Amino acid sequence: MPTVHDWINNPLGVVDGLFAQSNSCPDWEKKVVEYFKEKLKLNDAHTWVPSLNDVPLHYLKPNSLVKFRCMVQDMFDPEFFMGVYETTDPTSNSKQVKCGKYKDITDGGNSYAGTSQARVVPSTSYAPNRHKRSYEEDDEMDTQPQQMKDVSQGAQSSAESHGNTEPKRQETEAPSHDSSPSHCTSSLDLNFPLPGEKGPACLVKVYEDWDSFKLNDMLEVFGILSVDPALSVIADERESSSLLDPTEGMETVEEQRVHSPPASLVPRLHMLYAQPLVSNNPLLPSSALENSGDHLSSALGELPAVRAELLTYLTHVLMGDSLAAEYLILHLISNVYSRRDVLPLGKFTLNLSGCPHSSPYTEHLYKVIQQLVPSSYRLCMSLHNMNNQKMVPRKDYTANRLVSGTLQLANNTSLFLDETQLEQGQLDATGVRNITALGNLISWQKVDYDFNYHQMEFPCNINVLIASEGRSLLPSDCQVHLRPTLNPPNLEEYLSAVQVAQVPSQLNKYRVYLSVARALNYTISDEITKAVEEDFVEMRKDDPQNMSGEDLHRLLVVARLLSLSHGQNTLSRDGWMKAKQLDALRISRTQQQKCMNGNEP
Image (tube, rainbow, N blue to C red):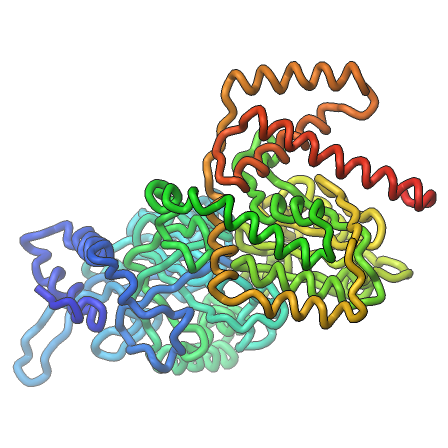
């Protein structure tokens, strides 16, 4: 069998070896997947596999095993591939059967798209989630009846067939976690959701279990890297023939440019194995949060001490406001853990009001948060941005793909809305749609993607922090008015000094703390539930006007996050009382601010 280096440097050799045994082992394809799964589990072997995220593409060996952490951005139609093909030796005239799986180019140098038996050009018809299957069925050809599934950030799924019948596999486009909006006119357009993103993009080809992947899923993919320059040549030839004879292919020129980018810019990755990323924090083992167990248990004892250090740090950042620092910690560990009908449970959108408009304070505050979380984005809510930025993903039927938007974000991304940048002016139709989309994201944790003729709802899990001067015009779960106790002569120098004082090892402790606290399971005992109900009845008697069901829900969310922030996975009486005290301080401060600013709502 292959040595330890062979299965990483030459995975196709392993595939060919198991294929050679296909006569005696009909389920050789399953054995291929099982072989690599077992290899990756042994002795942390997954750490030996080079990462497409970290290593420049030109340093990676073609047809070697690589890994890729990504978000599923778009999902393409299935395509055919040549599962088995026959070659003839010109000298001896002998024939040999070969395996074409996990390859874009056969050993003879032919592309699947150019073979007569498999004349199906990959298409980007994206169909979301469970609807994908039925849309693909319309395009199925008379080959095998199995369906395939696309995965964005690069996926292609395939059913396997032998002989002249070609299996259909699926292709999806994949950028890494952050991205930027783009238009379909350029062949170099990588279609990233976020402006200025430079992370790697990839087309992932999925062969098995394609039904388990959904749009916006975060995955760590292990697969065979394909960067053959012939892929770009073939794409150019197809485009030229389409211009000369539009009936030659099924794709438009725009589709071909989108679906066949140069392999040197967008490599292909033939998936062998993929696992969901429960957390996109690279400091945590990819399976640690999934299995909770040992890793979380060992970290629990350290949480209270790290929390105290983080609270001190954030208090300095917030210019001595420890109450705002408490709520900022709760916000940073919040997470949609469940949904009840349309209501997302666990979200905690924080409106930090009282932020100065004239100074670069919000920019420095965002930089601090950016250092603490795995993925984040600052959206300056200027009139120009609101009226011009493409926030909602939309379907481009000309290029047959989903054009990404700013709000197509990976789960647990921190979205920092800087409302201090607002100025007087008129919102146009795009601006109104963007404000509505932000409101829906905050209230319901969903984004309605634009499919021209209809909208399709996609659930999300985004931590939204709104920085504003007064109360935000957007909804929020909790408003805390900033009350500084420090007045440094030079605010910018002060904030820079606070950040520089945090050494990398300390920042890593904060990063791990936030991810672990967010991942903890949480329960409330029957005894505490009864005590909370009785307490709520008493509070309603004392002040029926200011204690509604919504207030109770907010208190329960605060109590949950406060417990988790201290490493406690169940609510205690003491934790409930602390949550009530914290909320009472916040409400008192908000009411005082209203008295000072009589014109503020």
